Length: 345
Image (cartoon, rainbow, N blue to C red; front, side, top):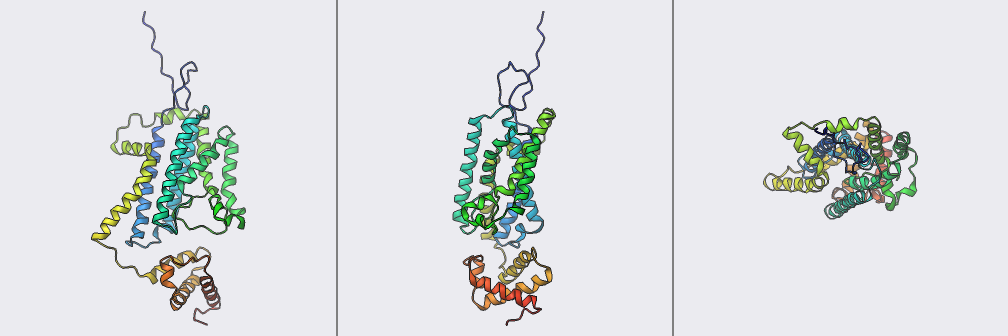
């Protein structure tokens, strides 16, 4: 008499349904890799836009203002959310120290590479605490929340989001504490992702995964895409599986590509005065009304040129936050604009 075939236990969170079976590493959920791959594509699009501005093909402020700024925040949030989701998925049945440490060391090593590389390429705006640094720090902090109730995780996420609105203080202006995210002065960096409030999407990802596991929905997620053979979906999944390597390589490749293009077809000469007025107005309108900014910025431009400071300012040879001459010009133009005239006193 033939023995009946047994069903293979479903493994989602690191422990088979059959307690007698040997523990196995949980399989990857294809959907998570697809989402991570899609986030990589979005990131490449954003960085390419930033590179176009850096080489002068578009307005340099394009990638840091308006919808593009919101786009960048959505990309960072998605990476952190998926990192939090993956942390719970990998350690749902108990912390696995060795895999966790291997992953953490890889992320930290990549973060140090980014810091070192940008220190040499952009010394005034190098990345000292970017997305990789944030993921590494959040992963360590996330261990505290692995076994806490989902409600506690969500409350912590809300508190983390609100913290920069209420807890900023001068003590955090010290460079050694910039990574916290509570400084009054925003540090200059090409990618600044401080712990507060960016721990929030990571915690949200953890909470989402916990809810899926509790609701037995993880099995359905794992089944999504099992029979999909689309070329583009396959590429997204492969990219998601190697997201760290792609993150490290894509920007040097894009910069090298645009550098080569610039040698053949250089960008048109930039009108520095127009660029200054545009960036000044964009920054000013965050705090003041448009009419004020459109008088204030031309005033500061005129005085900067008169005092032979404009060229040094545009090549980042002046520290705007520390130079008393810049503060004096700003004060003079503020008073002149508020009094109804931007003419020189």
